Image (cartoon, rainbow, N blue to C red; front, side, top):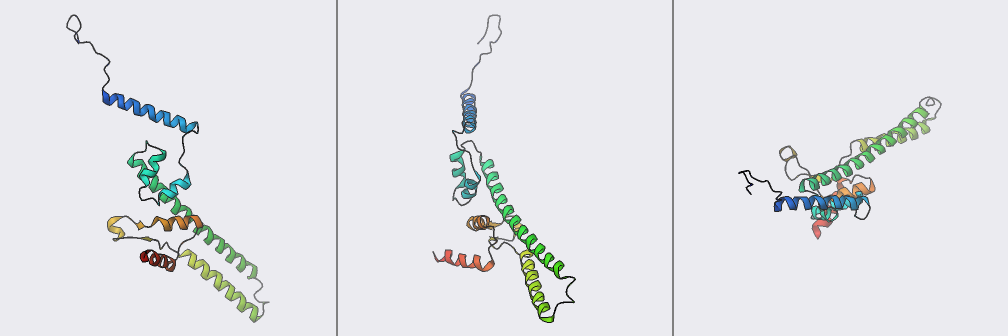
Length: 191
């Protein structure tokens, strides 16, 4: 509008786009307040792990938080998978440390008394030490067989995997062996 004297009056006109932005921000704050008041559901770890099994995990996450962006959803899923992989690997490391400590204690306990042992006892100790050392070596060289690539990883920088294997390894704190993965794949291919 023009004011008397030729000046233009600035009116407080809010466009529909701005109004929508205000309403969305208001809804976001309302959602966050409801979550703080525990009337809105928080996303918990077990749920995040379970969403990796979903055909459409983004939809699952949006049910609990409608304000997540696609970028947030991808980040959440990558972090969840990374978390499960790391926890599982930490379990493997703990098993290796436990076996190494057990082997070390056995070696220390018998390091000074070998001369006093008869031949049969030495053979039994040798078998036991060999068994423990082999077990430790297998644990140290274990790898994840449920991770595979469709193309050479150098080209794609992406690993393909079935999240059901990862969930199983995470829940039971194990690494599936090659034969176990092959057997499960055989069952899955039969369906």
